[in-house]
Image (cartoon, rainbow, N blue to C red):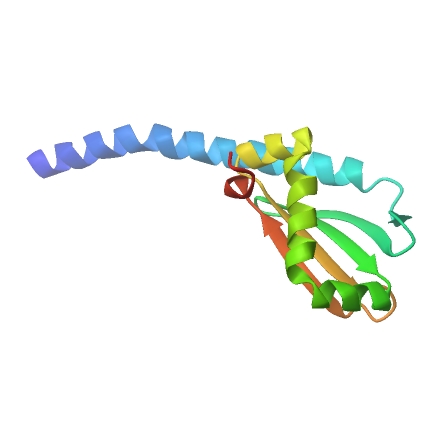
Length: 133
């Protein structure tokens, strides 16, 4: 009898925490879906002469930016992965909107591919630790 009472007590204590976590995950997903929809308006769009923004999608807690680049630029990116990572880190961590998303548990992922072939170039992702949040 004591085991049953203990099980019921533990379950009643853990359910609110699990529900709160589920609610937070749900709210984060909804926020990311809204950001993806709003940020994808007008895509594809040129960021510069080498990079084309194809829009955003969401997978779980990840906001994914799909970017296509010219093959020559892709070759430069492949040759300099540390520079690519540093530039993206600076861009992500200096953006207040991205910082807010990261602080709430989101992960930002950038997927780069070549414009015509769709050949993958690199994928970079960022969590709150990358911006020291």
